[in-house]
Amino acid sequence: EAGVVQSPRYKIIEKKQPVAFWCNPISGHNTLYWYLQNLGQGPELLIRYENEEAVDDSQLPKDRFSAERLKGVDSTLKIQPAELGDSAVYLCASSLEGGVAGVDTQYFGPGTRLTVL
Amino acid sequence: AQKVTQAQTEISVVEKEDVTLDCVYETRDTTYYLFWYKQPPSGELVFLIRRNSFDEQNEISGRYSWNFQKSTSSFNFTITASQVVDSAVYFCALSSSGGNEKLTFGTGTRLTIIP
Image 1 (cartoon, each protein chain N blue to C red):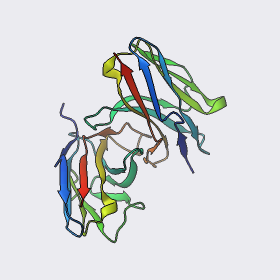
Image 2 (cartoon, rainbow over the protein chains, first blue to last red):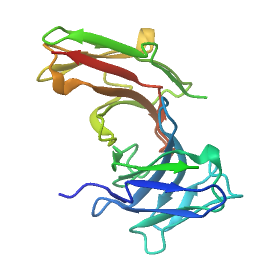
Image 3 (cartoon, one colour):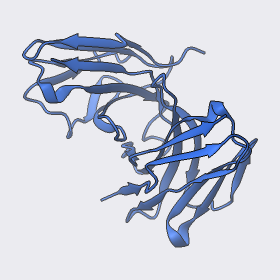
Image 4 (tube, one colour):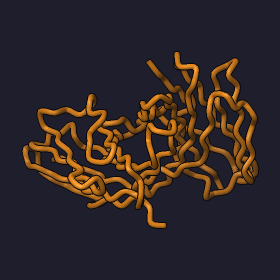
């Protein structure tokens, strides 16, 4: 079974430029998460989707970050414009029936390492 | 608020030694779940174990074992007979049930196994 797929793996941009990350979850997983991981830290949740609906976006900086999961499968996270402080690893995860039968295990992709110059 | 503390920032041991990674958590929930993930240099977080708050039985999986003690709010992870392939950053994480799927992670412990 294929795991969570993310692309690109690495991205280098100049500040004020836009950037987008793509995630394809494990087949059949209805819950999708985007996490931000700063160097030397644990991941922090940015947004969680149940199918197409963003059910927790309280930690998403909405002035410059946006996300979508139009068909309830893959998802895109965008930053516009990027700032120096956005340099980090952006991780996508998915789980099955998140929140319905209790907490379910989240499986993570390899992440996208963003460098903003 | 939930909190996970991994006080050990870095640990180095010689191959074949046993090593224990500490995890202390804080939560007001009576039902919660604890996790351990491994993050090798490739960057992907690899799921190792999930334990719910009602199951304090220790678990062993091959060279890995976990000790869950509610009395001390700890969920420690032991690797027996360590191998070089165990070198990675290990994260402990906490989540509550009831629809809140957010994982609260510790800051991780970087484990280096010296050949």
